[in-house]
Length: 371
Image (cartoon, rainbow, N blue to C red; front, top):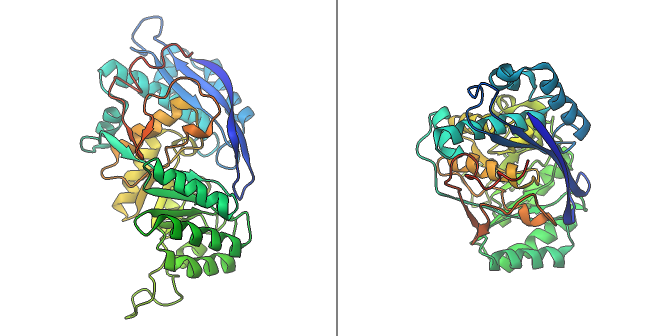
């Protein structure tokens, strides 16, 4: 196993309730055939791009990966090393190695990564394309409306707007202005990144109900599952089962709560209508797809997004999303947020969707010159 560090800037800082994201730093993780040519039959490539608050720190990620290299011989590295990495403690590190090994296995079998993942999870034939949402940062009202209109012109039909860094009045007005600008045919998602307390979140749900949001994402701190469960019944302040013409409750999606509590705890608490699955934060594409399957079985919709990853992890997330039957628009259109990337994108966004690479593994030989 080899590591190659990288650092990529964003075109402009992405403002969130947790503060701005300005750079993405991580490691390419490559695995090559063992000396006997049997341990890893084909080379594989992964990416470990940590984001504190969602994953471990960069230094913790590097330490974990270097520890695997130091402790494992060639055979053990391939068969057992992923189990050495705790997805709760160092999810980005596990993602990098798990992806590299999955890429190698899929390439060796001559099939795409999404086919490999779907077969392992017992899922049907994956989709050939995945619809994606546009992500709009926390700008002022006019900037937010302009960004929304530009996204619609580019073919997006689903917009995710960051909220929570401003006063609630300002965020409500921003979302109202976007709804007026784009009409009712566009799906709107609002992401607060855990910025609100229960009182503010309840008021937000009540005031945003008339806008018909697809969902309100992470309105409360990550550990407040009881609060999120209670918030699912809040729309116009009435019982959603009552005989009334009032607006229905705003669906609640959880993101950071999955990293803090685990998918099973979120589902057991009845805390979400949708779960936002970041393969990097969950510890790998395999764990993200398994989480999506469990969510569907519980009647909760899975959505796959990135942590503004580089092209290798972003491509892997596309494969994960494609393996989920009839997945809703996913947060995979994040490559344009980077001012440079590690390689040309094998699945660029076009008219609000991405085509899944069909070559073996991640994208055939598209990344072979990277490590």
